[in-house]
Image 1 (cartoon, rainbow, N blue to C red):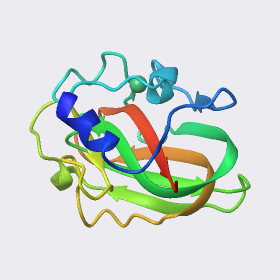
Image 2 (image 1 turned 180 degrees about the vertical axis):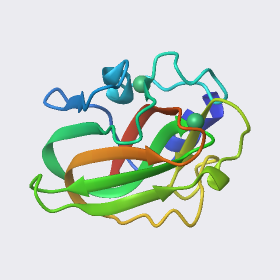
Image 3 (image 1 turned 90 degrees about the horizontal axis):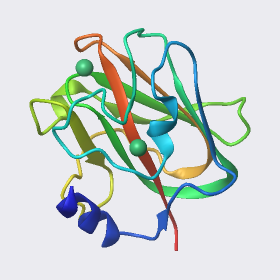
Length: 160
Ligand SMILES: [Ca+2]
Ligand SMILES: [Ca+2]
């Protein structure tokens, strides 16, 4: 946890949840707001504690930043043993896949894992298909794995 945040801090400027940002989820997601409250689950912690979690593969965690930002990186906390797809949009209509996490990308064997695209971050994972650019809306979905899914936090890194 500590080293993770330190690594992020050494990266580009941080965009903590802005006042105008909102998070919503398609049912049935428990603890939806935990996906974007600025609080990071410790790596390896239980997947249902202070996280947005669900069992239905069709569920989505939706985040609206409230404004368009120039995204240069993403850091996300998800359950370690599933596949996660992050879609992003500027207008809420046209969507692009900006991150593609597979269970094999995880560095840990149990609980929540923090994964980053930011160079120099100790949690950086290469080969996530990260697509930088302008974004406002996010949709996070999960598939495969053990059918038990969880998102603990998302951080959008922006250009200085
Ligand atoms: Ca959180
Ligand atoms: Ca899982």
